[in-house]
Image (cartoon, rainbow, N blue to C red; front, side, top):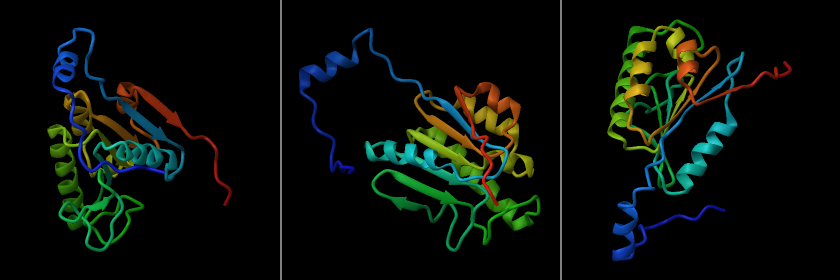
Length: 186
């Protein structure tokens, strides 16, 4: 059962300021995690992790670059609970191959620009970038732009990247790489 906080609890005056200035305390640095597999897959444990963080009162962004739907896009994010925002590209279908139309490419570029902006602003504690590796492989998002975002993001932001065949450059800067090897039966 997840409890929801309505408002942050007030801190005692003397204690709060004393803790913030203590020389042994420092902000926890965010991590870069990669979840990959040889096939296209939905990573349930990534979603569980995102929901757990949101349930603790922190803001989480889930971005699905290759999934579309009715009334999607950065203007229509889905809100789940108090801290979980889910955004998909403003496209009418789910991309399965490198066959995006110009309108779909523009929608994905807009979603990437939105993602860069909100991550760099530090609005979210965690950002899940779903099927990012395929978006890179399909030429929809630049690998260099992803690397730049990961290197320049605010230090407290956790980023989770998912998708098959993640580029080596992203694996190299990841703090944790999880590879699912089991094949599902057809």
